[in-house]
Length: 282
Image (cartoon, rainbow, N blue to C red; front, side):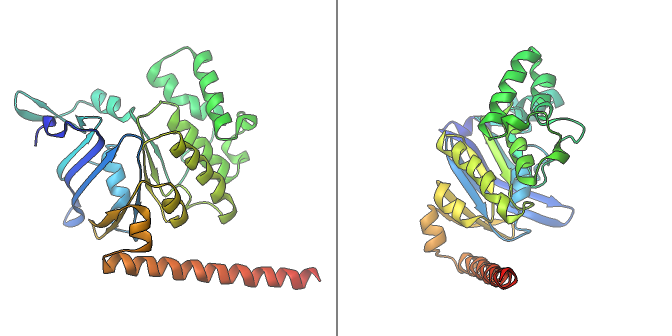
């Protein structure tokens, strides 16, 4: 397929994407389109290929087969005189600068303050005046509710606060696309809401996002489309209420039943803990 095959409104287009590590096939032909300002949530059990797919979009892994376009450009390769060539490192870095990624673990530089973490990429890549970059970084920290903690080090911040700094850092390069890889999975339950709140605000502002998540409430409320993946393929996709409330495929139904059972078990445990604390309090 050539680059001209993706002239459309899609900000992201994946066609027959495959990825193998040795003899292990992780992705087995993924097709996915994401329009500008859309939020697409990827759901599925561990090992279904969701994270690998994000890493391919951001060129942290190389494709085994298929094609991915971001903003109309082939990712990782380019066409010259009818032939495909691997992009040079500088060109790959330019493509990556259009994409922000937020990981499960916050990956902040521990020796840098919150504002220094946010400033790092723009200072090194954009080479703009530091005063301008610092002003924009502080505005981003304000946006995620951490303006007063700009000079705190990661060790002085809670997990939720560190993840919000990571989101501000991802936004610092003014990306066209944000990728989230289970951004709340490493957080204590009481800190999940503050991170999801920031993500809701970004969605409301029209930020294009692909989100790998197990937060079903968030997916139902915020996503334009939900994609259920299992064993390296897209099993089912559609509007959140269709996939989450009225799934057609048995594999989707089975996954959602397990998620519900786990949520009910956690709720029962929380209720038991509350009752125990009330007895202790008496």
